[in-house]
Amino acid sequence: MPIRPWSETAPILIDVAMGRRPADLLIRNGRWVNVHSGEILAGHDVAISSGRFAAIAPDLSYVIGPQTQVIDALGRYMLPGLCDAHMHVESGMVTVTEFCRAVIPHGTTSMFVDPHEIANVLGVRGVRLMHDEAAAMPVSVYVQAPSCVPSAPGLETPGAEISPEDVAEMLTWPGIIGLGEMMNFPGVAAGDGKMLAEIAATQHAGKTVGGHYASPDLGRPFLGYLAGGPADDHEGTRLEDAVARVRQGMRAMLRLGSAWFDIAPQVKAITELGLDSRNFLICTDDSHSGTLVNEGHVDRALRHAIACGLKPITAIQMATLNTAAHFGLERELGSIAPGRRADVILSSDLVTLPIELVIGQGRVLAENGAMTAELPEYAYPQSAKGTVRLGKSLAAEDFVIAAPAGKNAVTARVIGVIENQAGTKALERSLPVRDGAVEPDPAQDVCQIALVERHRGTGAVVNALVSGFGYNRPCAVASTVAHDSHQMIVVGTNRADMALAANRLGEVGGGAIVVSEGKVLALVELPIAGLMSDERAEIVAKKADALVEAMRACGCTLNNAFMQHSLLALVVIPELRISDKGLIDVTRFAPTSLFVD
Image 1 (cartoon, one colour):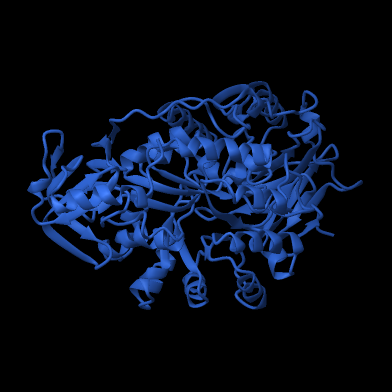
Image 2 (cartoon, one colour; image 1 turned 30 degrees about the vertical axis):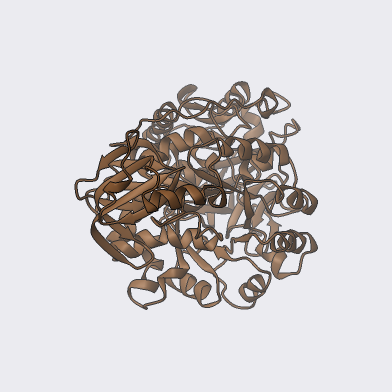
């Protein structure tokens, strides 16, 4: 059941605090991590009733009744439950339920999710499915209305589109907290009417506008984007990015995902320049299921931030109170204080942050890394499946890059992958031509990339070149997770393997696959919109780990290379991307030719 509003439970909380009524749960003898005052206060009790904090004091023994559950903290730290300020559930390849199953044991009790991945496939109905699933969770999962579907109009073709009218409708749903990341930053700076209408609707509703400014240019385009109203940004990668955003009134979201390591350079704005930490938040953005299950979620990002020089209490504030305040929920989430949702972590150390007990909305949910509470079942309808439509069986010939007539070598534009960053480089490489076809060159770490249209069954294939994966044997890696249009991306050194990989994903309804010399080395089936599995999180994590290992076996040495693979069609982050419209120069937001004149 949804947690009751504070206004309804206030009489109960007052009676508990006054000793007129027993508490539902009492945590005794803990060290109170007070994110409001920045203190750690030893020897405190915490009384909980109706899923909310009723009182915090050195001795609350008077609230113990016959049915009160008593937990002895044994002097451990009592932290507020952790908040992820910006993330995409679909990047974990699992449903909202299974994402929660993976992250609750790591102490995450509040999430602010942007379901624009499923929106690009199923539109508003896909958002509604995730919204309704989120509402049934025993933790707080807030949903943002996707803003940019497509992310760059005219440069890609998604499976669905979302209009300003759709956004206005979604903002009336009970679980919608604001507008998802406004990725079309050139459109905002240019005064695009559609983008400004979505922002205006969000502001009129009194909700938060999410930002996404993925350009290093902090001059006039940045100023124009800021004037449009986005309130936060998670796309900073440099110290100057964090500084510029906070000075201009934005909240800087420092990101640590599976493959995005953006905290270290930006946290220096606090540790070295002394900027006010209240305007900095922690987010994960995109986390692989293997990362979630094996390494952690927001707790992983906190450990990293502390290792980068942040004081533990400051890092915890950034992942709790700061996030709640940003979304207008300071009286609801983000601290251990009267009236707030009773989200608590017990931990024996504030630096290494072992997550030893997790309480969400007054219930013990996990202990020592394992769920102890049951999550409700949620089944996606058949209409959310069967979304991969290739139109034909693909052959090796569909992946041939024809060279200009008479050429025995070409100079080609090549997408350059940057390890641990979402951006790419625009490279140029000289490549051989054989029998009229441009050949990949393992010696230069250049292989082929293809975008296969999968929403409308046109059979269209766009071919280009990519560098940075290190593949050194005949192989292909294919995925229907391809931010943001979620067409199919195939990267390979062997055209027959590329065709096999694409066709196999068509057969299973979507997913990710590694093929080498005609053999499937790893496969993660993702039948829900071609983005999410209907299996348990731990099973998906094992399959995802096998996928990464298969990529390594083919020569790839990148950290979490699948995340890099999945962003190669993201035409809103510079410099060079692929879409169904061709090769896209994201510095100019325009198609460009594969060959250099």
